[in-house]
Length: 531
Image 1 (cartoon, rainbow, N blue to C red):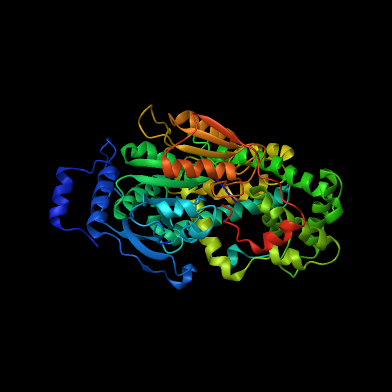
Image 2 (image 1 turned 180 degrees about the vertical axis):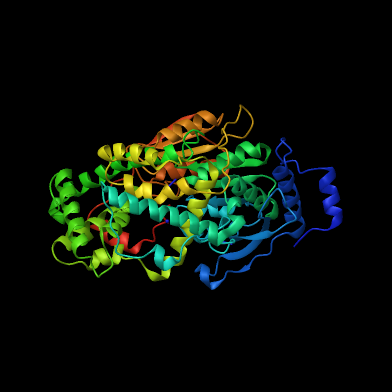
């Protein structure tokens, strides 16, 4: 689901012991992958993990240290090909007397890397948590230095300018179908037989091996967006291994919605959040001059799109790049001032800000293509998708009449799954019973479009004893450690003491951005990846 953005073998005595007594955290089904997870986990305990300086390519501060943990490519064959999962860490600042263990983080995607997470240890929102926990990030399989996969040459993936028709013609649809088919073929060609092993259930197993490698008796975990689906599946699969878990901006786990229908619902929700942005810009017409009503702001955006179609800015920013840049406004309102400023300046004859914000960067092309390849592999492998183009065309042509902003961009991103040749997993019916796991903390913004709020309510229903904290009338995707002190207070209390509200709590929204002060702040502040 689009959510917008790391990296020895045990001896024969260990193998004999594993055959006699699988690890306590192994699911009771006893299938080959479950037994393979027990083998890999015990091997990780024996090998341990050695942290050292991070490779320069990670671009992390010297306070962060890095390591690699070996996991099987195929858990049904745990002694076969092994891959390395890149891990990053900052040790708990409070020392042994206050340390509660490791807090593992997954930023979502799928395809996002959490390697940057330990670098947040000195940020005010994370300081107390970082005193009690080692902050641990990692790159899931396929991402970054963790057995990376690719489906297309990065330069081709980021080729610009591109079009972005709101209501594509029959010819444009044929072109989109051809591109999606070629992309799926590229994934299969580049990754080969290994491609089938990149899916959420294996990500869950990798997380279990990471826990064992780090020497953690039970898992303390923070997952955002797709990371909530990963966390919920882990809690169901290894309930006795869960200590505390924060699930931020949840995916709707209904197996009937993984992943095709979730994407339809996301496109519809994007329209509402895009309307929020346009209303904010209209309220600040005195600053941006883009119109006094959301309709006028839309007209200004459409005018820019038409101009870019005729004459791409700097030869590389066309309608597709404009669309990609402004999609960020749906994920995080910190983007609102800079995007409105860029649009305003462009329409007044100065394209520099728009080029700076929307032009693809050659230096980021490989990372972006890799992230998209992992996103595609995991989503396509995870569940059945419609294989008849007529179904996609019917559903999304109708949807685009109600939600034109993102519908077709979402289609083209996910359509390779219609032509996927690898075996599909069957989505798991995520549920835990009373007492299966400790209380889990769910965080959600009421107007989140990337993972609509209904999914948070459904996840709480399925995880017995879980607690939901809602940021009312707000729509930023990923609210942990953000601008809302109330949300952060609930998360901090939970992680530090295990304390939660009784069942549900709500927080007033964080202030909407100021068009003047946040213009400067948005340029200076490092925003988290939009995934």
